[in-house]
Length: 271
Ligand code: DGL
Image 1 (cartoon, rainbow, N blue to C red):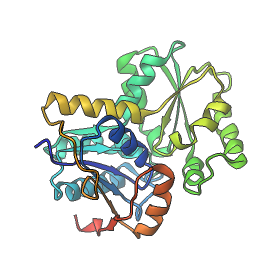
Image 2 (image 1 turned 60 degrees about the vertical axis):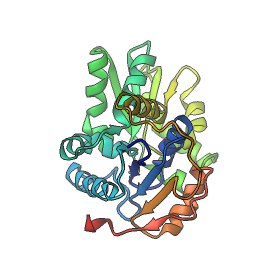
Image 3 (image 1 turned 30 degrees about the vertical axis):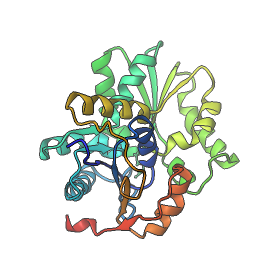
């Protein structure tokens, strides 16, 4: 059981920020990553559509004998996690709950900002979790869809990204937030810019760290963690995509210091 891979999925490349944290915390695990490049972005789609896509991906990952699923995509975690938990007999971890917990622990003012996709913001799920931890917390959300394209275009340290960040983050002026959740896979890639614009008094929360921690806990509790060193080869990290692997490889290299030479294309609509 412990030697089986962990299935990780996202709408595209962004989930590699989560995979990076998983590998850092759980280096002896094998991983299968699926990026739904053909159907991204998820952040502008309906709950029904994202749920259907997510279930297809989990069915595909099951064919590779995964022992657990990490939903690396914030949007899919926000709108489809419950359907995945209910529909499959596999342990599933999403990124929303761990991110909300970290933010609830961090805030002193009880005012938390959330930057994410439109679908994640309007799902209301962050508020739901935050208020479970502390009913007095107030959440102020701002959809930041352009950040996704900027990161994918490689505009990491770029005046255009800084300008867009200024415009987006002006939504938090006068709100007294002291904590800001980077509730989208791509945003940790531009963390420095976000931090500069938000100011030092705002603590940024990267849900990927907490997700990796929750995954470790879950594996330990179920006695599923692999403690034996594994050879780092193509079998240790396998990548699948729903569109041409070329673009995935090119953008993936911005995210991960790993060779993604062997990414394979599959037909996800068949699952
Ligand atoms: N992966 C998505 C998320 O974290 C961002 C990109 C998209 O909209 O598909 O919400």
